[in-house]
Length: 132
Length: 101
Figure 1 (cartoon, rainbow over the protein chains, first blue to last red):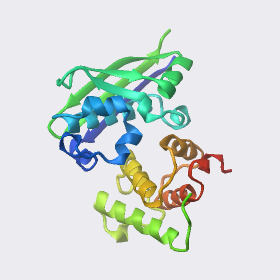
Figure 2: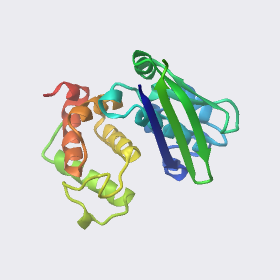
Figure 3: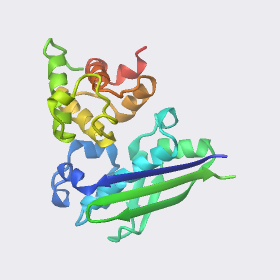
């Protein structure tokens, strides 16, 4: 039986160097880590918090699977955190490609996802379990 | 593939050291090639990604992050020296780094 828990915390200020206000300028690193859909979803008034949360989500997913060889084939852009509205509490974690494949091959599911935020930090938690 | 010159190693060395001095707020005297990036100077994955991006731009490299991930599984990068060594291999081999062994 498999249970994995991944938690990541990041300071939002660290992402200021990668994204200018309202995403007028975006560091090339962003395109390596975030999908086009995420970039479109995040750019706006709360871009800094969203990009930070998106990164935390990806890190938490990798950690929940144990990292290392388990996750070496995963493209970070295949782990997407998508917000439904301006409210950071309304989101979905969507897996595609390499991330979806590893979950499916191992018969796993994301049983819990949570996001906590303050003015300075974002924390993301993912719990992964066996489907059976 | 970038051209490797006699200066490339010293450029990479200086870039890595300068980066960690600034990001981890440490003195140069606290760093050496055996410094553990995580346990000694509290480095993290975001710093690692940013460094990779710096080198990608500097040397116009064709390298994917997941290729680096696959390489690191077989060749752990824990120290500054190992990071410099990996960077030199990336500059020389780009995405073919995963086929080296």
